[in-house]
Length: 312
Image 1 (tube, rainbow, N blue to C red):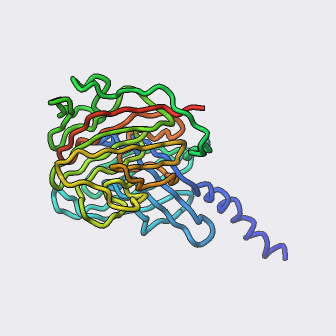
Image 2: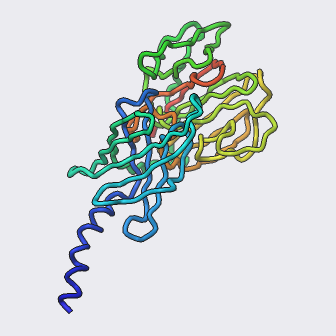
């Protein structure tokens, strides 16, 4: 009996250590060219049902990881895709190990030569809920209708690409993403916006969670629609107006609970946010963060941006 038990006992520490990969990870990528953070969820380690989800390859979706393994204490997964600029196939290989202090330390190596170091920390537990106990603080006007005071570019070494005209701010195609100088925790946010035909933008809450802006009047809703929590929560209905018309968001964020009202229709009602979306420029979910206005896609205009803190 002792000879049979000994090999099994030798494997127990390995499985116990590997199980520490399980969970949700907020990932900082210091050299990422678009100043984006990543997000990873690992589950089923040691059960024979290893699974993973990932935000950060190579664009914005929350992707199910198709090939994921743990070998000799190293987490490995990869993605194959076609680069939208060159049209060439690219493979991205990710590998990471756990450090003694419980962080995830890894590297992404792409077949086109790109290489990025990354560090992950466990996503914090946030217990606050939008439970009716929050009261409104003093509203903050985030846009003065004259200039871009209070905003800066998120992406380093990229021209701003925004101007103010007729009391609204607008971008050129491919502009920098704007980030508010101020950071916030729980709040309600009113934003008025206008997009042209086939245009695309977004609003980043705490600089981490994107509410999508998309010209999609009359189309069936999905996780990428106007009003969606990008790639995570679809709006219940399509409440979009036609291209060129002013629209309005009224958004509440308490903890990870989000409610989205688009053009006076509630399209997301107190849904829980699983984790970062692709707009994230800051991986520290436990801290206040800025508002982001996405400018690196199509043309968009914003006006009347008012944030009201929610306090107890």
